[in-house]
Amino acid sequence: MFEKGEYVVYGSMGVCEIMDVTTMDLDGMPKDRLYYVLHPYYQKEGKIFTPVDGQKTVIRRILSKKEADVLIDDIPNIHEFWISNDKLREAKYKECIRSCQCREWIRIIKTLYLRKQERLANGKKITAIDDRYFKQAEENLYSELSVSLNIPKEQMEKYITDKIEKQYA
Image (cartoon, rainbow, N blue to C red; front, side, top):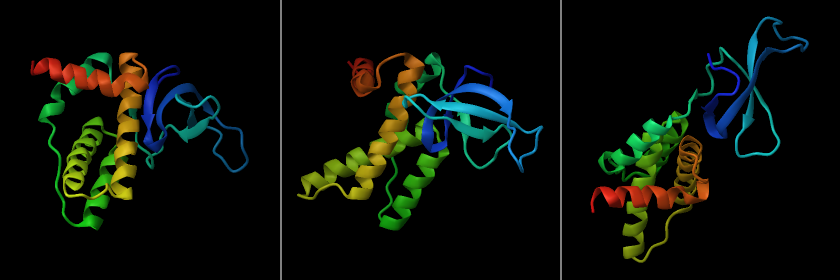
């Protein structure tokens, strides 16, 4: 169980702070069931109420600073995936996004970066589906790493690139 004040990744909502753990006094709701009250980190307003024992949406602690640094150092070792069938590829993107795992988001980013380069070299544009999943994976990854490392989200791509380049300098 998470505690008030902790940061978590909550499904597609991304990084959230746990504002409270409480019961809800609503008709038709069990009076003894506990709920997390979440505040999405990158939204000024907004609350999410989700059962502590809920199973529908992935909820996990954000990476610690040390875990984030180790993950970034390991990016060169995280392999992309190649799926030629468009429908199967999109299904894999969805699976990776829904996993709420940073390594899977990195796999999408690496895969789609290389796919984009290949398409551009052949005089083609990136597909709308590829672009959408690329942006979503970047947003998810950079949002979490930003909070873990206390670096503005807008600077995450440069921070990651610089850190990896230093490894190979």
